[in-house]
Picture 1 (cartoon, one colour):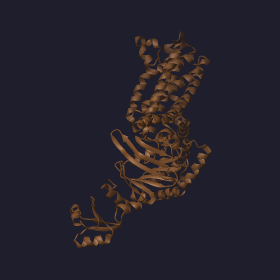
Picture 2 (cartoon, one colour):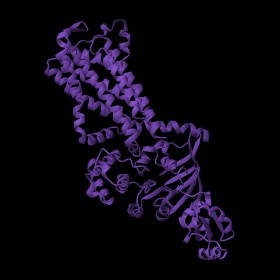
Picture 3 (cartoon, each protein chain N blue to C red):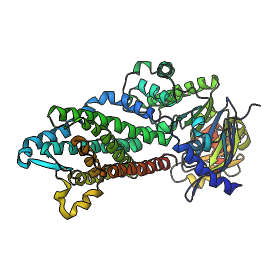
Picture 4 (cartoon, one colour):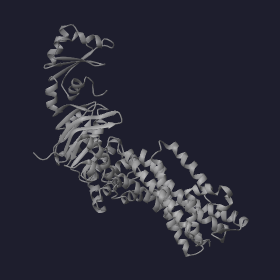
Length: 308
Length: 270
């Protein structure tokens, strides 16, 4: 196996008394799409900032391309692309200028920077907006421009911090398509997300983070098989009776989970579980049988839903 | 091993942060960004010019001449170098406070730059370099106007340009360092409040002697040392005190630059 691109051992990040990242071990192989999954405050962004060499490691070791960010930050950053959680596009410049000026920060010759800028505009489907001021772009376009900008140095590793948060479904799908193409070109992707569908779509392997720690690791499919049943029955009861209903479903399926707005029943066969609930005389306002997702894995591992 | 590691990391980071490789990239970014805002750049030239014209028209006849290092010079030729020095200060402060605060906290230009091989020292020096370039443009054009109005005394006056560069360096560094401590736009009022007395009490409009027993207060003002330099250059009168003025401005620049790069590092690399 090739040497891992990222190696973290017992990685810790503290801000004063607060421990944001609490001793995580991570390895990312070249060409992999790797995800950090977790709710807000789980330590994903702090981890990403350390990997992006803009945040010093408190303790533990971190190596990218075999180099230490503390001593070779600049050299490492020359080989990675970063899409931050909030766009840091330059609003005083046009779309095109945003790209080639950023290329200059990587010491690209001006002609080369402009050539790549034109290519990336094509890739990000922004060619017809090349001369526009950044402020006039839609959220999805800004995000695509951020991704295009992060690619100006032909990075071997692309870091994406919640790439599609705040975008409408259509814009998300366009973005996923672009990321998928990059992956096919051999770019290593590391992303954070709190969207299950995003993790399932994009990640070969992911870790679930909670309160600064890694609570599970594997492929999306692995994790679902390991931590959840095949299917889930979702029952909604009329307002106020939700919490009383949990006793009613007791014993149905493998596990039951009470959420503020619904009751989840984990079962191999969701329809059978629903039939049993009806047989017991339960009268939910609505019932839904679906396949288990990463959301369920997270709920089982941490006792909390990702939306918290 | 782990405690040893802890001790090494911050210093190792510091060396990476303080290495200067490509500050000129920041300047290049500004050149492109200001292509759309050239009017703002041009406007900076007019304020000191209006001051100069009003002083010449209004006060010149009333005051007569003033002594610079024992040499009598007409009042407008006395005030002009001080206005030149003040505009060097104003330009440097303007570029290194409000604009920097905007890029640091709101536009997040520096966050974007630091995700590249650029480091905090590149950003700080690039910003200060930009302020210097802009300041030199104003200084050159101001000197041109002075020459046209017959206020330039000799070829020595050309040394007013490096003097203004030094003033620009000192105030841009101080401005940048100060801005890293600002929390929001309201802190910009402090800058305005601090600059007014500097402008008025730096032997700008009167010689030091007219401050009487309060003359020592004037010497605290960094601008005073800048005014003295530009004035000496324009009059072509050189004394050993020039070295002290240069030393004050160089020292101030060095300390402020160090603080600026350090603060920028701790702000952006949390």
